[in-house]
Length: 114
Image 1 (cartoon, rainbow, N blue to C red):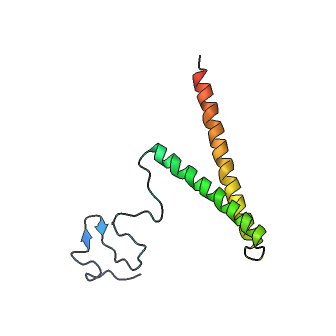
Image 2: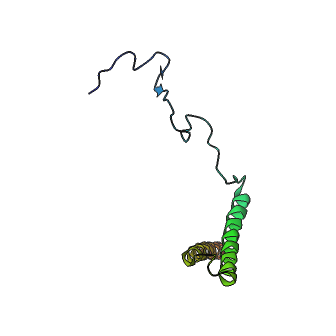
Image 3: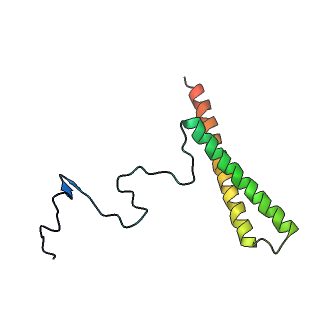
């Protein structure tokens, strides 16, 4: 057990329940606002939905482009890279289809309430 000394707890380091910590890594935010990296923030639900559908579309386009590259230059693209990208695109499209089906089913059930 380490002995507690006064130098460990300096007067300006402890304020009530808050203890200021020294940050040694750039990833530590230390109370600063966290900025999203590489993603736009949505202002409302329609923006969030539009951004999500754009990402699904981008995955579909990337998978199609990789498929075309494999046909034109078979040694330029690894087969597993194509399969991974195609599977990501398929899974995201399946998820969107399921969510859309669920939304339509929910709307029908709500409109048929008696």
